[in-house]
Amino acid sequence: MTDRANGRGEGNRPRRVLVTGGAGFIGSHVAEGYLARGDEVWIVDDLSSGRRENIPDGATFHEMSIGDPALADLCHDVRFDLVNHHAAQIDVRISVADPARDARINIMGLLNLLEAARRSGTRRVVYVSSGGVVYGEPHERPTPEIYPKRPLSPYGVSKLAGEFYLNYYREVHGMDYVALRYSNVYGPRQDPHGEAGVVAIFCNRLLSGEEIHIFGDGEQTRDYVFVKDVVQANLRVSEMSLPETGTLDDRAFNVATGRGTSVNRLADLLEAASGRRTARSFRAARKGELRHSMLDTTRLSARGWSPRYSLKDGLRETFEYIAAHTAAAT
Ligand SMILES: NC(=O)c1ccc[n+]([C@@H]2O[C@H](COP(=O)([O-])OP(=O)(O)OC[C@H]3O[C@@H](n4cnc5c(N)ncnc54)[C@H](O)[C@@H]3O)[C@@H](O)[C@H]2O)c1
Image (cartoon, rainbow, N blue to C red; front, side, top):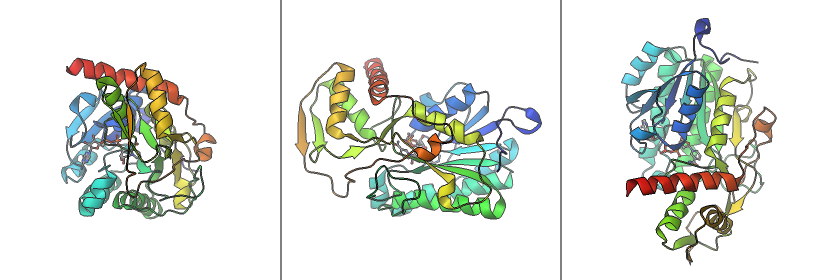
Protein backbone atom coordinates (compact mmCIF):
# COMPACT_ATOMS: atom_id res chain seq x y z
CA MET A 1 0.00 0.00 0.00
CA THR A 2 1.22 3.52 -0.65
CA ASP A 3 0.67 6.21 1.94
CA ARG A 4 3.10 8.73 0.59
CA ALA A 5 0.72 11.67 0.64
CA ASN A 6 0.35 11.25 4.41
CA GLY A 7 -0.89 14.73 5.11
CA ARG A 8 2.51 16.35 5.79
CA GLY A 9 5.24 17.62 3.54
CA GLU A 10 8.95 16.80 3.75
CA GLY A 11 10.49 17.25 7.22
CA ASN A 12 6.97 17.55 8.67
CA ARG A 13 6.41 21.00 7.14
CA PRO A 14 2.84 21.84 5.96
CA ARG A 15 1.85 20.04 2.80
CA ARG A 16 2.15 22.11 -0.39
CA VAL A 17 -0.91 21.69 -2.56
CA LEU A 18 -1.57 22.97 -6.07
CA VAL A 19 -5.26 23.30 -6.95
CA THR A 20 -5.83 23.90 -10.66
CA GLY A 21 -9.18 25.49 -11.46
CA GLY A 22 -9.26 26.88 -7.90
CA ALA A 23 -11.09 30.03 -9.01
CA GLY A 24 -13.96 27.88 -10.28
CA PHE A 25 -17.02 26.52 -8.53
CA ILE A 26 -15.79 23.20 -7.10
CA GLY A 27 -12.04 23.96 -7.10
CA SER A 28 -12.48 27.05 -4.89
CA HIS A 29 -14.33 24.99 -2.24
CA VAL A 30 -11.66 22.28 -2.42
CA ALA A 31 -8.89 24.90 -2.01
CA GLU A 32 -10.71 26.20 1.10
CA GLY A 33 -10.84 22.63 2.43
CA TYR A 34 -7.06 22.19 2.14
CA LEU A 35 -6.41 25.59 3.75
CA ALA A 36 -8.71 24.70 6.64
CA ARG A 37 -6.69 21.53 7.36
CA GLY A 38 -3.46 23.51 7.48
CA ASP A 39 -2.01 22.95 4.00
CA GLU A 40 -0.25 25.65 1.98
CA VAL A 41 -2.30 26.21 -1.16
CA TRP A 42 -1.44 27.55 -4.61
CA ILE A 43 -4.08 28.09 -7.29
CA VAL A 44 -3.51 28.07 -11.04
CA ASP A 45 -6.49 29.26 -13.07
CA ASP A 46 -6.79 31.21 -16.33
CA LEU A 47 -10.13 32.73 -15.20
CA SER A 48 -11.80 31.53 -18.42
CA SER A 49 -14.88 30.58 -16.41
CA GLY A 50 -13.59 31.02 -12.84
CA ARG A 51 -13.76 34.24 -10.86
CA ARG A 52 -11.14 36.11 -8.90
CA GLU A 53 -13.59 36.63 -6.02
CA ASN A 54 -13.90 32.84 -5.57
CA ILE A 55 -10.22 32.52 -4.66
CA PRO A 56 -9.98 31.89 -0.91
CA ASP A 57 -7.90 34.15 1.34
CA GLY A 58 -4.60 32.55 2.14
CA ALA A 59 -4.09 30.87 -1.25
CA THR A 60 -1.33 32.04 -3.61
CA PHE A 61 -2.89 32.73 -6.99
CA HIS A 62 -1.26 32.47 -10.43
CA GLU A 63 -3.38 33.57 -13.38
CA MET A 64 -2.07 31.03 -15.83
CA SER A 65 -3.30 28.36 -18.21
CA ILE A 66 -2.53 24.73 -17.38
CA GLY A 67 -1.11 24.59 -20.91
CA ASP A 68 1.46 27.33 -20.18
CA PRO A 69 5.10 26.12 -20.23
CA ALA A 70 5.72 28.45 -17.23
CA LEU A 71 3.77 25.95 -15.10
CA ALA A 72 6.93 23.81 -15.06
CA ASP A 73 8.85 26.70 -13.41
CA LEU A 74 6.18 27.09 -10.74
CA CYS A 75 6.21 23.34 -10.01
CA HIS A 76 10.02 23.34 -9.97
CA ASP A 77 10.18 26.32 -7.58
CA VAL A 78 7.50 25.17 -5.11
CA ARG A 79 7.82 21.35 -5.41
CA PHE A 80 4.20 20.51 -4.66
CA ASP A 81 3.54 17.44 -2.54
CA LEU A 82 0.05 17.12 -3.95
CA VAL A 83 -1.63 18.33 -7.15
CA ASN A 84 -5.43 18.52 -7.24
CA HIS A 85 -6.58 18.98 -10.82
CA HIS A 86 -9.95 20.67 -11.29
CA ALA A 87 -9.20 22.99 -14.26
CA ALA A 88 -11.00 21.81 -17.38
CA GLN A 89 -13.18 22.59 -20.33
CA ILE A 90 -16.42 21.36 -18.71
CA ASP A 91 -19.11 21.86 -21.33
CA VAL A 92 -20.28 18.73 -23.20
CA ARG A 93 -21.83 20.85 -25.96
CA ILE A 94 -18.61 22.82 -26.55
CA SER A 95 -16.71 19.53 -26.77
CA VAL A 96 -19.12 18.32 -29.46
CA ALA A 97 -18.88 21.57 -31.44
CA ASP A 98 -15.09 21.83 -31.09
CA PRO A 99 -13.45 18.57 -29.98
CA ALA A 100 -9.95 19.95 -30.57
CA ARG A 101 -10.55 22.81 -28.12
CA ASP A 102 -11.70 20.30 -25.52
CA ALA A 103 -8.59 18.16 -26.11
CA ARG A 104 -6.25 21.19 -25.97
CA ILE A 105 -7.36 21.87 -22.40
CA ASN A 106 -8.41 18.48 -21.05
CA ILE A 107 -5.65 16.41 -22.66
CA MET A 108 -2.75 18.68 -23.72
CA GLY A 109 -3.20 20.89 -20.64
CA LEU A 110 -3.27 17.81 -18.41
CA LEU A 111 -0.06 16.48 -19.98
CA ASN A 112 1.70 19.81 -19.47
CA LEU A 113 0.69 19.65 -15.80
CA LEU A 114 1.65 16.00 -15.34
CA GLU A 115 5.09 16.47 -16.89
CA ALA A 116 5.71 19.47 -14.64
CA ALA A 117 4.50 17.50 -11.60
CA ARG A 118 6.58 14.42 -12.44
CA ARG A 119 9.78 16.38 -13.04
CA SER A 120 9.42 18.25 -9.76
CA GLY A 121 8.74 15.15 -7.65
CA THR A 122 5.01 15.54 -6.86
CA ARG A 123 3.90 12.52 -4.84
CA ARG A 124 0.19 12.32 -5.58
CA VAL A 125 -2.31 13.75 -8.09
CA VAL A 126 -6.04 13.94 -7.41
CA TYR A 127 -7.67 13.98 -10.84
CA VAL A 128 -11.28 14.98 -11.44
CA SER A 129 -13.12 12.79 -13.90
CA SER A 130 -16.85 12.62 -14.50
CA GLY A 131 -19.16 9.74 -13.59
CA GLY A 132 -21.89 11.50 -15.56
CA VAL A 133 -20.09 10.93 -18.87
CA VAL A 134 -17.47 8.15 -18.74
CA TYR A 135 -20.04 5.32 -18.51
CA GLY A 136 -22.15 6.56 -21.45
CA GLU A 137 -25.80 5.53 -21.01
CA PRO A 138 -25.38 2.82 -18.33
CA HIS A 139 -27.99 0.08 -17.91
CA GLU A 140 -26.88 -0.71 -14.37
CA ARG A 141 -27.94 1.88 -11.79
CA PRO A 142 -26.54 2.95 -9.43
CA THR A 143 -23.52 2.48 -11.71
CA PRO A 144 -20.38 1.00 -10.10
CA GLU A 145 -16.84 2.04 -11.08
CA ILE A 146 -16.22 -1.26 -12.91
CA TYR A 147 -19.11 -0.69 -15.35
CA PRO A 148 -17.82 -0.57 -18.98
CA LYS A 149 -16.67 2.87 -20.07
CA ARG A 150 -18.41 4.08 -23.23
CA PRO A 151 -18.21 7.88 -23.32
CA LEU A 152 -20.57 9.46 -25.84
CA SER A 153 -18.96 12.90 -26.15
CA PRO A 154 -15.46 14.28 -26.73
CA TYR A 155 -15.64 15.63 -23.14
CA GLY A 156 -16.29 12.10 -21.85
CA VAL A 157 -13.44 10.75 -23.99
CA SER A 158 -11.01 13.39 -22.72
CA LYS A 159 -11.95 12.82 -19.06
CA LEU A 160 -11.43 9.07 -19.45
CA ALA A 161 -8.21 9.57 -21.42
CA GLY A 162 -6.94 11.57 -18.44
CA GLU A 163 -7.43 8.53 -16.20
CA PHE A 164 -5.44 6.38 -18.63
CA TYR A 165 -2.61 8.93 -18.74
CA LEU A 166 -2.47 9.03 -14.96
CA ASN A 167 -2.40 5.27 -14.83
CA TYR A 168 0.57 5.36 -17.22
CA TYR A 169 2.38 7.89 -15.00
CA ARG A 170 1.77 5.65 -12.00
CA GLU A 171 2.86 2.42 -13.68
CA VAL A 172 5.91 3.82 -15.45
CA HIS A 173 7.02 6.80 -13.34
CA GLY A 174 5.64 5.83 -9.93
CA MET A 175 3.58 9.02 -9.57
CA ASP A 176 0.61 8.15 -7.40
CA TYR A 177 -2.95 9.23 -8.29
CA VAL A 178 -6.65 8.95 -7.53
CA ALA A 179 -9.45 9.71 -10.00
CA LEU A 180 -12.75 11.06 -8.69
CA ARG A 181 -15.76 10.47 -10.89
CA TYR A 182 -18.26 13.12 -9.83
CA SER A 183 -21.97 12.93 -10.48
CA ASN A 184 -23.84 16.28 -10.72
CA VAL A 185 -22.30 18.68 -8.22
CA TYR A 186 -24.34 21.63 -6.96
CA GLY A 187 -23.87 24.33 -4.34
CA PRO A 188 -22.87 27.93 -3.65
CA ARG A 189 -20.81 29.58 -6.48
CA GLN A 190 -22.04 27.21 -9.16
CA ASP A 191 -22.99 28.83 -12.42
CA PRO A 192 -25.62 27.65 -14.91
CA HIS A 193 -23.13 25.98 -17.29
CA GLY A 194 -21.87 22.99 -15.29
CA GLU A 195 -23.25 19.46 -15.12
CA ALA A 196 -25.74 20.44 -12.41
CA GLY A 197 -26.41 23.85 -13.97
CA VAL A 198 -30.15 23.22 -13.73
CA VAL A 199 -30.01 24.02 -9.99
CA ALA A 200 -28.58 27.50 -10.61
CA ILE A 201 -30.97 28.10 -13.52
CA PHE A 202 -34.03 27.19 -11.44
CA CYS A 203 -32.81 29.32 -8.49
CA ASN A 204 -32.42 32.33 -10.80
CA ARG A 205 -35.90 31.80 -12.27
CA LEU A 206 -37.50 31.49 -8.84
CA LEU A 207 -35.82 34.75 -7.84
CA SER A 208 -36.88 36.64 -10.97
CA GLY A 209 -40.36 35.08 -11.07
CA GLU A 210 -39.79 33.91 -14.66
CA GLU A 211 -41.15 30.62 -15.95
CA ILE A 212 -39.07 27.45 -15.48
CA HIS A 213 -38.48 25.56 -18.75
CA ILE A 214 -38.29 21.79 -18.43
CA PHE A 215 -36.93 19.77 -21.35
CA GLY A 216 -38.84 16.55 -22.06
CA ASP A 217 -41.29 15.22 -19.47
CA GLY A 218 -39.10 16.19 -16.50
CA GLU A 219 -38.87 12.59 -15.31
CA GLN A 220 -35.20 12.24 -16.33
CA THR A 221 -33.09 11.75 -13.20
CA ARG A 222 -29.67 12.87 -11.99
CA ASP A 223 -27.61 12.16 -8.90
CA TYR A 224 -27.08 15.54 -7.20
CA VAL A 225 -24.22 15.75 -4.71
CA PHE A 226 -23.54 18.82 -2.57
CA VAL A 227 -20.19 20.57 -3.08
CA LYS A 228 -19.25 20.44 0.63
CA ASP A 229 -19.54 16.64 0.53
CA VAL A 230 -17.35 16.68 -2.59
CA VAL A 231 -14.70 18.65 -0.66
CA GLN A 232 -14.63 15.96 2.03
CA ALA A 233 -14.15 13.29 -0.67
CA ASN A 234 -11.16 15.25 -2.03
CA LEU A 235 -9.60 15.56 1.42
CA ARG A 236 -10.16 11.86 2.09
CA VAL A 237 -8.52 10.61 -1.12
CA SER A 238 -5.64 13.07 -0.78
CA GLU A 239 -4.18 11.02 2.04
CA MET A 240 -5.69 7.56 2.05
CA SER A 241 -3.58 4.47 1.45
CA LEU A 242 -3.86 2.90 -1.97
CA PRO A 243 -2.80 -0.43 -3.46
CA GLU A 244 0.50 -0.24 -5.41
CA THR A 245 -0.92 -2.02 -8.44
CA GLY A 246 -4.32 -2.49 -9.98
CA THR A 247 -6.62 -1.63 -12.82
CA LEU A 248 -7.85 1.80 -13.89
CA ASP A 249 -11.01 1.27 -11.84
CA ASP A 250 -9.06 0.41 -8.67
CA ARG A 251 -7.89 4.04 -8.62
CA ALA A 252 -11.28 5.56 -9.49
CA PHE A 253 -14.01 6.47 -7.03
CA ASN A 254 -17.53 7.65 -7.75
CA VAL A 255 -18.47 10.74 -5.74
CA ALA A 256 -22.27 10.90 -5.62
CA THR A 257 -25.22 10.01 -3.42
CA GLY A 258 -26.46 6.84 -5.13
CA ARG A 259 -29.91 8.44 -5.45
CA GLY A 260 -31.64 9.78 -8.53
CA THR A 261 -33.86 12.87 -8.47
CA SER A 262 -36.10 13.87 -11.36
CA VAL A 263 -36.11 17.40 -12.75
CA ASN A 264 -39.77 17.75 -11.69
CA ARG A 265 -38.91 16.73 -8.11
CA LEU A 266 -35.91 19.09 -8.11
CA ALA A 267 -38.20 21.97 -9.07
CA ASP A 268 -40.59 20.98 -6.23
CA LEU A 269 -37.73 20.85 -3.71
CA LEU A 270 -36.38 24.23 -4.82
CA GLU A 271 -39.82 25.79 -4.50
CA ALA A 272 -40.03 24.43 -0.95
CA ALA A 273 -36.47 25.59 -0.12
CA SER A 274 -37.06 29.08 -1.48
CA GLY A 275 -40.64 29.58 -0.32
CA ARG A 276 -41.41 30.79 -3.86
CA ARG A 277 -43.37 29.41 -6.78
CA THR A 278 -43.22 30.06 -10.48
CA ALA A 279 -44.87 28.67 -13.62
CA ARG A 280 -43.36 25.66 -15.43
CA SER A 281 -43.45 24.92 -19.14
CA PHE A 282 -42.38 21.75 -20.92
CA ARG A 283 -40.17 21.91 -24.05
CA ALA A 284 -38.99 19.27 -26.53
CA ALA A 285 -36.48 16.83 -24.99
CA ARG A 286 -32.83 17.65 -25.71
CA LYS A 287 -31.23 15.35 -28.25
CA GLY A 288 -28.64 12.97 -26.84
CA GLU A 289 -29.45 13.78 -23.21
CA LEU A 290 -29.09 10.82 -20.80
CA ARG A 291 -32.38 9.59 -19.37
CA HIS A 292 -31.05 8.46 -16.00
CA SER A 293 -27.77 8.81 -14.16
CA MET A 294 -27.01 7.53 -10.66
CA LEU A 295 -23.68 6.33 -9.28
CA ASP A 296 -22.79 3.62 -6.80
CA THR A 297 -20.59 4.98 -4.00
CA THR A 298 -19.98 1.75 -2.08
CA ARG A 299 -16.23 1.85 -2.72
CA LEU A 300 -15.59 5.31 -1.32
CA SER A 301 -18.03 4.66 1.55
CA ALA A 302 -15.95 1.62 2.51
CA ARG A 303 -13.01 4.02 2.79
CA GLY A 304 -14.71 6.37 5.19
CA TRP A 305 -16.53 8.89 3.00
CA SER A 306 -20.24 9.29 2.56
CA PRO A 307 -22.36 12.33 1.73
CA ARG A 308 -23.69 14.12 4.81
CA TYR A 309 -26.02 16.68 3.20
CA SER A 310 -29.61 15.87 2.33
CA LEU A 311 -30.74 17.32 -1.01
CA LYS A 312 -33.20 19.50 0.92
CA ASP A 313 -30.47 21.10 3.08
CA GLY A 314 -28.01 21.46 0.20
CA LEU A 315 -30.61 23.12 -2.02
CA ARG A 316 -31.57 25.51 0.76
CA GLU A 317 -27.92 26.61 1.22
CA THR A 318 -27.51 26.97 -2.53
CA PHE A 319 -30.68 29.03 -2.93
CA GLU A 320 -29.75 31.30 -0.02
CA TYR A 321 -26.31 31.92 -1.52
CA ILE A 322 -27.67 32.71 -5.00
CA ALA A 323 -30.40 34.93 -3.52
CA ALA A 324 -27.86 36.89 -1.41
CA HIS A 325 -25.54 37.38 -4.40
CA THR A 326 -28.33 38.39 -6.73
CA ALA A 327 -29.51 40.96 -4.17
CA ALA A 328 -25.93 42.27 -3.74
CA ALA A 329 -25.49 42.63 -7.52
CA THR A 330 -28.64 44.71 -8.03
N1 LIG B 1 -19.98 20.60 -11.92
C1 LIG B 1 -20.19 19.29 -12.03
O1 LIG B 1 -21.29 18.81 -11.77
C2 LIG B 1 -19.06 18.38 -12.45
C3 LIG B 1 -19.35 17.02 -12.69
C4 LIG B 1 -18.31 16.17 -13.07
C5 LIG B 1 -17.03 16.64 -13.18
N2 LIG B 1 -16.78 17.98 -12.98
C6 LIG B 1 -15.38 18.44 -13.12
O2 LIG B 1 -15.05 19.23 -12.00
C7 LIG B 1 -14.07 20.20 -12.38
C8 LIG B 1 -14.51 21.59 -11.93
O3 LIG B 1 -15.74 21.92 -12.57
P1 LIG B 1 -16.66 23.14 -12.12
O4 LIG B 1 -18.06 22.69 -12.25
O5 LIG B 1 -16.18 23.68 -10.84
O6 LIG B 1 -16.40 24.16 -13.30
P2 LIG B 1 -15.79 25.64 -13.32
O7 LIG B 1 -15.88 26.12 -14.74
O8 LIG B 1 -16.40 26.48 -12.26
O9 LIG B 1 -14.28 25.37 -12.94
C9 LIG B 1 -13.26 25.12 -13.88
C10 LIG B 1 -12.13 26.09 -13.61
O10 LIG B 1 -11.04 25.78 -14.49
C11 LIG B 1 -10.55 26.99 -15.02
N3 LIG B 1 -9.92 26.68 -16.31
C12 LIG B 1 -10.52 26.27 -17.45
N4 LIG B 1 -9.60 26.08 -18.41
C13 LIG B 1 -8.39 26.37 -17.85
C14 LIG B 1 -7.06 26.37 -18.33
N5 LIG B 1 -6.76 26.04 -19.60
N6 LIG B 1 -6.06 26.71 -17.48
C15 LIG B 1 -6.33 27.07 -16.19
N7 LIG B 1 -7.57 27.11 -15.70
C16 LIG B 1 -8.60 26.76 -16.51
C17 LIG B 1 -11.75 27.91 -15.14
O11 LIG B 1 -11.41 29.28 -15.20
C18 LIG B 1 -12.52 27.55 -13.87
O12 LIG B 1 -12.11 28.35 -12.78
C19 LIG B 1 -13.88 20.05 -13.89
O13 LIG B 1 -12.75 19.22 -14.11
C20 LIG B 1 -15.16 19.33 -14.32
O14 LIG B 1 -14.95 18.59 -15.50
C21 LIG B 1 -17.75 18.85 -12.62
